[in-house]
Length: 252
Image 1: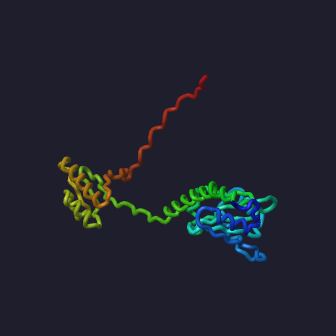
Image 2 (image 1 turned 60 degrees about the vertical axis):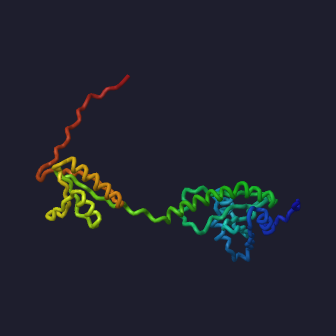
Image 3 (image 1 turned 135 degrees about the vertical axis):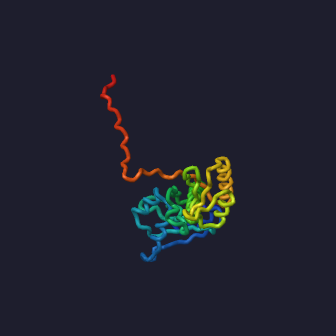
């Protein structure tokens, strides 16, 4: 049975709290050291946008404690700052994730607990840690997306209608050239393109389908495209007729 009147000094409170949390935790006390301390670096990592963040913004932290588990989970513990009893407890954000990974992630806000570390451990275990794990999972997922290699743009072969024939610009890859020639495309050196005649439309359709299947097996998309229509030289496009105008009226 624990002592009903535990030592409520910050260092002792944090040490007892660490022993009551699930897993193996260590507690490190950060005293003032005459103003030469690393409290600013710690408070900058406090993962909170609620009461704890508000308290830290209004007051300077004279001393604090950091609880850390082997998996890297860290908790920040400080006096309530100002008037009041108990302690401020909040999670510390991970250092190994880029700032972009935190965008859109709800902070696992901390809270103020009473001076009893045993009761505080229950609040941390049942409330703060689950919210921290959920937020951390989102951050890690975002970080993985940021560092994942972007998929290369899919290569494609464009078949353009030219009258009844289909035309393909001469490709750089030999395997694409082979797929075209094996399925009826003939190279036209004067135009530097491959041409599929439209004399037999059924044969042409079968050739296009077979070529597309072969190119798909190579990871290449096939696109059929009509040539862009351009106005004849020296002519001006005819403007569309003006819409008819009706007399305005009011409904009753």
